[in-house]
Image (tube, rainbow, N blue to C red; front, side, top):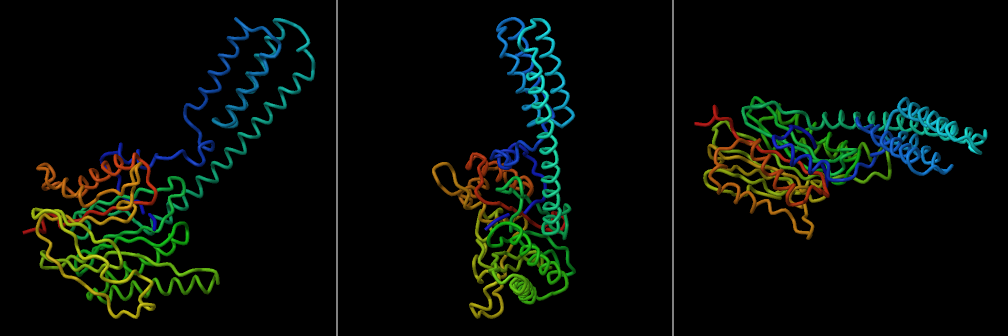
Amino acid sequence: MSGSPVEAPREPGAVRRLLGRQVPRFSLLRVDRWGWLVPAVFLVVVAAVRYWGDSSENIENWLLMVPLMAAALCTPWVTATFGGLVLLVNRLFILMEPGPNLRVESLVLEVCVVLLAVLVAVLRSQARAYVLRLQNAVLAAREVVVRPIPPGWGGVESATAYLPADTESRMGGDFLDVLSTPHGARVVLGDVQGKGLASLSTAGAVVGAFREAGYHERDMAVVAARVEDGLRRHNTLLAAADARHEPRLATAVVIAFLADERHVDVINFGHEGPLVLGPRGVRRLPQEENPPLGLAELTGTGPARISRVLLEPGETVLLVTDGVTEARDRHGGFFPLTAWAQKYWTTGSSCGESPSTLLDRLMQALADHTAGHLNDDATLLAVRRTAASRP
């Protein structure tokens, strides 16, 4: 299973630890604002050693490392500038102590190294621009699947977060949405089997079907059937386009806030049950009552089972994907979400805290548990009725 983005959390330290957990795959493609300092310091050190210490004729060759360093860290123009400085400094040292280094071969070698460094910098710059375009395209596609949720949207107070395990591509099959409909707020969170563009495409099909059916249909059984049908038609289309395509499944939880402002309808498609945190403590909503989306035809099940449960004023529903519950510490232990929620809610300061604060604290605990190392995309959604709608 996999991952989806949204709202910036309030404790950036925890998020930085989770998003910056790994050495970036394309680290040498990134232009650091202060990257020029590395070749500059190296140039000064080698020049100082040559001037005040070692006067051998080979010390100047170390200066050829400067444009190569610049090629890995700087723009082509900065690399060319360092190359020119190296040629100038080497010529000055040779003029100070004329010798065999005045040979034309030495100058030709230095010029070739500088030109090679500039070529590498140009290629690296082009590769970096290409990678950035790909990342922007993926993020644009993901925003179609997981769009930003305005505060108070749909008459509920919600907070969302997406923590990608792959910090470079940020492609996964996690999805979520909060709908404002004529029938009340409706939310969904789920996870598509697998990773990559295929999972992202499947997540788009599922959440797209939910957005249409969830807005127009009053009956939640019809909404569930149309979401299932949307995934079936998507799998059929991909199989027709590619005979090697394997149908993908998705687990999901759909929650509909009812007009009585005291109950919600819950449809669980093979997903772990959401937690409810409130004055009565912590409890779990129904889980895995229906097979995952995409299995209805194989299992021969009828209409989706819908559970109507009481949601007291002030209670917050916490939905997560398995990237949270299966996050491991260095000893291989899973993150104890239920135990953490119970401990969190027993503290006096937690009562009445907003969904965004709840997610902030949860991400901090997740970062502490994993030491900032996520093995799978993690998507989180906390939602409750707004204070204005509560009696």
